[in-house]
Amino acid sequence: MANVLKRLATSVSVWVTLLSALIAVFIRFRLPFKPNNISLQQQQRLFTSEELALYNGTDDSLPILLGIVGSVFDVTKGKSHYGVGGGYNHFAGRFAPMDCIVLCDLSSIL
Image (cartoon, rainbow, N blue to C red; front, top):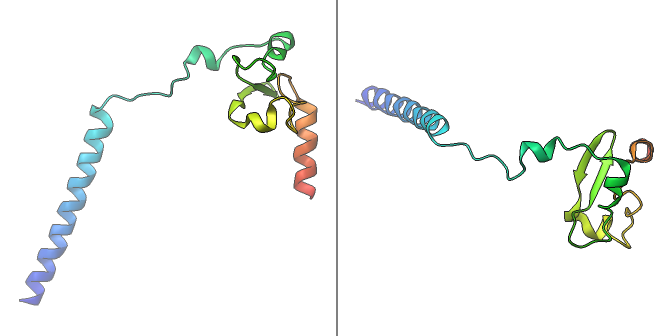
């Protein structure tokens, strides 16, 4: 009797696992994928140094952007750090490849 119950419990757990996997696959492929609000066009925008300088945190209507080794990041959420008066405001609105590399190297040493 115990052996039958053990086999039944094992088979039930196997079926529950398989059913869960099938539901997950169904949901993954049948429901539409909603990408982030950032469009592909925004992700591939190229900035000149003069354009990027406008996004240094002095204009509240614009995001704060930071260029590091060819990539541009929106650091508006860290306005207290990257905005006017923040400790990292020097980097906002600029391409800062060497400055950031030096900071990364120093932080790994400390």
